[in-house]
Image (tube, rainbow, N blue to C red; front, side):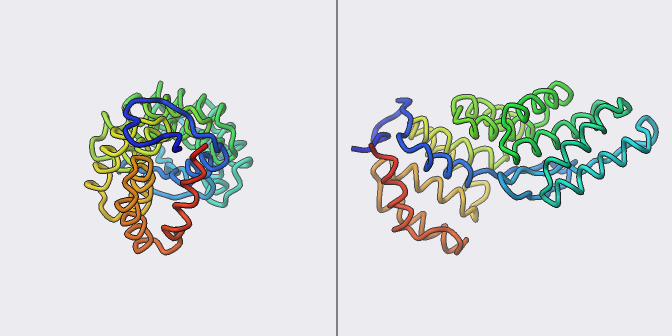
Length: 251
């Protein structure tokens, strides 16, 4: 019997296969960065890197060098070193609130890629205090909560990101999976549908909707989504392999 079976509605059960759930969550993690910050995918959890643009005056040359060195280390996947550089940049005390929010955001992303979600959330909290309308910050904090299996809080943060940016396709996509893992299957399906309306060529959104459809008992619809997802991204598992993974969500 499926743990999150058809008609589960708002029932909030937890899957019994934490390793699989962790793998599903790790696979979903992508971030979309607003236009004022450049896009850049990282390895690991794939958090986005903010490009630091400093206004004239204020920050000393040493602080700026530390900030940019942090970016270089983060781009290279050296997250411990990135954290060290960003910490020196923050401690310099010469950045504007906007730029300080960007550095806290970057350091939070580095902590998240290191798997230290407690420290990541602490830095996202500070970035939100400095920039309370940053949809990407709420979104990435939601990813960090998902990394802690705190899907309820993740759903709230993804929702806040969506309220700030109604076209944030990945926030809908990620909330879809978090909702599905909470057993809120109808809500999850609506989120995946909206994500695909905004970004119809998203293989990951199709993959997440397939999980939701599978949990709803709509296996043929799930198979079609998985086939469409693999057509977009051949690196994804076959629908047969994916169904086998989904089966492990059942007790």
